Image (cartoon, rainbow, N blue to C red):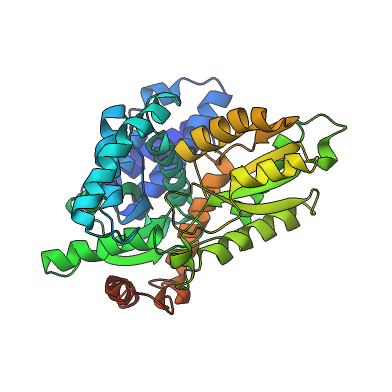
Length: 421
């Protein structure tokens, strides 16, 4: 196709569309075709593209047919946001149950704020999680518009649990935009009642408190611990980091897969999180050909109660005492950098504890952040989910055997009963 004929085609195409409202498929087709046209012009050093006044982004801003709500706990962008973040966190009964929570929660939040603010000040003054989620979302919907034109245009929304943009506000924005098909997409690959479960409960409560039915057809991607492209991303980042160890030490490096711990009270109720994290680790090591010794460890324990272990810091100490002083930390349950990677793993363990223990080399594999392969993984997950026409996984419908939260059952029933067209 020549540049001249392509340009003529665009004028005919737009004339034909000018009297009618653009459909998602026509917008997607036009965007794709114009992208090809632009590429041809660049390759041939042709100026036709500059004379062709068409705004691809304006076309993509058409009413979204499919909205993808990216769920996460979020993190404070500024130091002054820390208190409100902690207050919402310690008041979340899905995450933790405290005695007289309406009084103890605010007390703990106020008391911990200075310490947490100090930690954030050491990593740039705030959490980068919104930045990375936005980048991942942009890459995801761009791919989806090409991969799945029948469900286009796609738009991503961010729904954080404890900071803006809050999940409830994101739902309101989706409804104002006129989204037809809504996908609640957890950004935690491994399901836990205290993370993904809490976010899904927030969606259910939003409609329950409002007393009416959703205007959108909802479905949920509630877990994806062994998705092939997720596994490939982790394996790629681990391989890249292993190459940075001295060649003579490389085979002796111990890989520590570190995930956020859970109170044993939650684990013993039947929360599937530990098993799903373990499944991710196993698939990643299979992809790496079990190249190095490894362990699954747990971080971020808080308070005197019993937590899932062994704890990451204690394992680092134990390895050093036994002569294993080359360590690679892998944040296996996180999809982007935030305080638990940038401060806890990098500073508390990688710098302070590493020096105390006398490690020879301690490194951390990069988080998935802006990896294009990870954006492809997100798009593939959504595309497969939309094609399945299922409201949720069968696993979501099963409550923890010893669940004590009645809202969980109501939430699961809410999503399982969604009718998709």
